[in-house]
Image 1 (tube, protein in one colour):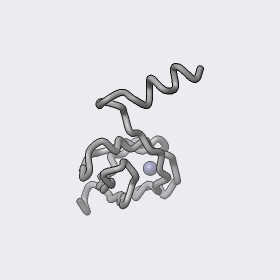
Image 2: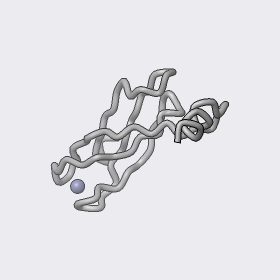
Image 3: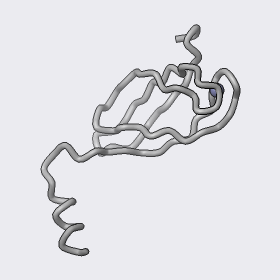
Image 4: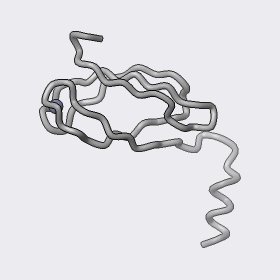
Length: 79
Ligand SMILES: [Zn+2]
């Protein structure tokens, strides 16, 4: 177990830096957890709401270390 953990930590790159964040859907207002890939510092993309299935416009800012600094969700019309 420890051996595998160390191997994982020393992988040079392409380690997925996923963080899980809670967002509220701008359409139905339901809160849900979304996975955010922090390997890119600033990104805009669409995520489908799991409850009403409409496209939420996501704007994410991550730090160099892979922490989520800012995450905003808008409806498509606002974006
Ligand atoms: Zn929704």
